[in-house]
Image 1 (tube, rainbow, N blue to C red):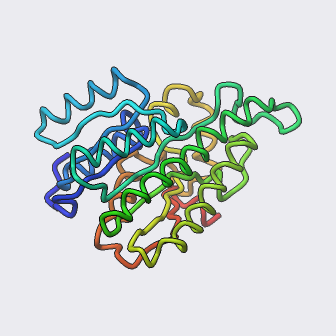
Image 2 (image 1 turned 90 degrees about the vertical axis):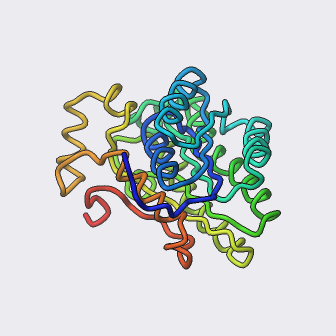
Image 3 (image 1 turned 30 degrees about the vertical axis):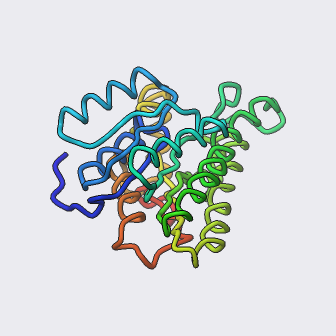
Length: 260
């Protein structure tokens, strides 16, 4: 990926769940546009491998091992970016997903509370914790931009997500909107992206091809999976100076699903 625009020159950014899928595509996009980017992930070996690959391509990236749902780890993550770069300008809070005991499509009355709590922890608690510490850092340096990953499951009811995931991703949208209002006058812009079904490793590897085809047929008028790079482009726009008057917005990148 070679991008001529340098909208992020001199900016310091972090991306959670940044070692694969949408997160990795966003790391690459921001780095190609000139940012110094922290790849933040619990996947130590994969994160280090991606750091080496991108650094070999001449990009300014570094890896931080961090669980975005553990407050102490999040606090260290943000502090490390500030230590290395002197500030935090951009944060992409991308961590999330179904918990291990919370299978997509499980009826509410058959779900476990443990599964519910794991999904909410990964998909909503992580967003709160990251924003808490990112905003604190940005307030010290005059502002910044944050973008959170929600989901079309947070905007539309679908049988292909669990009740916990739907509730958590809807919560991300409302938390984003509230935070955008609270910090608008402090020069911190906060928005979200709601991906449709995206061709990330988690989807391509774990979801049956027949299920993927059904979701695309039933929900994506454009008739295709969304590329991770398309989600990354939305994040890159939301957090750049071109969107200086945009905050509290959730952008569906969904092949037309939101229009149904």
